[in-house]
Length: 599
Image (cartoon, rainbow, N blue to C red; front, side, top):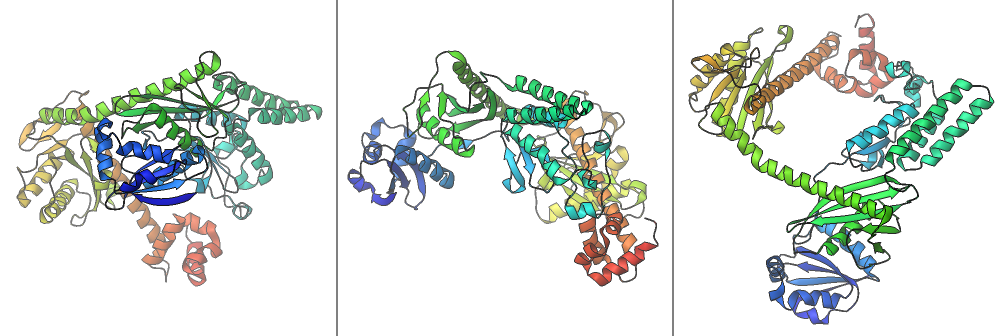
């Protein structure tokens, strides 16, 4: 590969070789990357007959100040290089993948005793990933099959040979109902456990035959030794696997490792579906959209997608099907089947792309219409002067009169804005007093916003009836803000809404979207307050149990809380593990101090 940089005036001196070209603007930024069989002809086409280009292309050409090319050996190499450069630089005028979904994967962890579970944000550092899958329904079907066939653990225990040997764990319900063989207490060795993991991995790779032969061998061996119950168990596993396979096969089972790429498009977007089929079953699938930048053809877009998807899924399929005619590029030959099972496979792929397009357009319409509609409706139903696009909702929590706390949750355009949530420790109120606690937190919140000149919400919601509302109103009056910020209370019993200085509550229809939004905010504030209260109470109880030991202070208790979570866990951990956190001397002091305590 050879790189050379040219000025715009040197276009005619470009070589006629295959390769890629990069366009730079005056700031030295890459604004476009393209590939070509013939670099000279392709790049010249941008600067000749400019009147034939669309507006976006003319705008891009006007920005080009320098051209860099890379000559490669073949068009296939150019495709791969183009794909890598677009991913690396994301130039302004290149079409970019836009995936509206977070597709599910299945992860087999790299722990000594691995777990298998679905994930939506895959990270290879935790283990081996399989997928993505078309839907969570497909993933759930696979996980249900694994529950029938294998005894893989579902717990999150940190199982190592050392921790198992130390007897730190107890068997759980999964063991008692026959769904787990309890590696946590050494009832199954790692080698036998990994046999089950390996068979699960074969299924995820589409190698059903290997797993069926494995079960068949186990069944025959059990029958030969007259272990008929064991033989029957493996027979049932074979039947479960065959039943699953019959449901998962959607085309001819003789189809082995075929890639299918289809595209449907409109003026603004192109929607693409990818299916990889092996032994008649879908192994991988993905649907994405491309936003068109320079009026690209379906063929150009599909070429880019083929390279990107095959790279992502490490596909080695030699047969590629599509719904549009394309030139053969590189070593890949693309066919458009007209009849038979291969045609049905292409039609299935097109159906996925069309569904994705419909779904995306509906979501776009919903995003545009729903928030404004909801806010407009809420404004009318709540008798407000402005739309409540910014709502703040307050709740208290002081279970058993201890550790009084409060929470404020924020909703923007009818949806939670969790980065704006706030939690409060009650500072000025002694004992369980919801009314004065509400006065304190409303005062603290809006005094701070006023002093920092931050925007106020369009609506304050108080979780409670007339009592809590009156104290919140008094807080606003004392701050000189009453009348500037609308405020209401929502009572739990009949979901009635109270307004300041109005004895008659407002009752909204139970199906009202406005009421559902307020209930969501109220429930979210309650959850947030309860969680904070529970964490605080747990932390204080932990600290009290340790801090009474002579020589152990709050900072030491904090370190141990972070590591072990409970006093029982400290006792189980033993001297060596505690010493790693606080040193051997303090570790002995703690264990001696806890020895006589009943925890």
